[in-house]
Length: 203
Image (cartoon, rainbow, N blue to C red; front, side, top):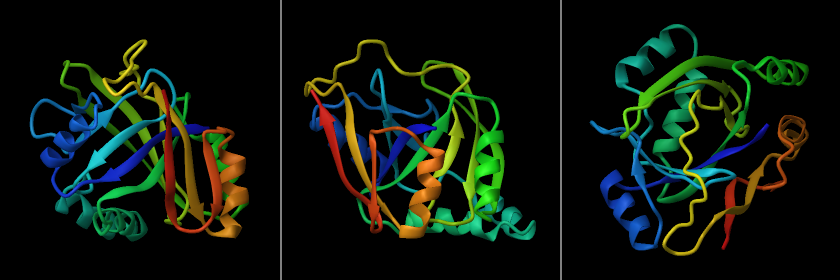
């Protein structure tokens, strides 16, 4: 797997988008109508996702709890409790399933929940993908890559940044071997700690 994207908590989505645009980034909303996120894409490597709140309704949270998936809801609560800034990551593969990842997680006795997701982006493209949420909050969540590649070709942001160069992510010592087996992307630097320590860019 590769590092898919980095989650950045904002106080309000509109303020977050404006702040990153002032920093010289191209930012697009996740959808044309009532967006719940915004994206900063690069031609290669991980992108940045801006979130003010978890992209799931109160009704969906109740359903998840009723079917025994409270651990998944706990992850969304954790996202919403974060202060403004980078706070978590997602890993991705280029398949339409998580067969390899399921084997690794089961080997380490890690439970998980898989679901589907989709959204229509501002250009009218219907993006589809699958998500896997480990119950262990200190393991990143996963996604299959979009059915359509939304990343622009040869993109350089007004500030000159071409891509994310390195992400330093902290987790429990005992979980590092699991993540290393799942992800072979040298963009991701793991250490003992909690959450994202540093994000660097390449110009």
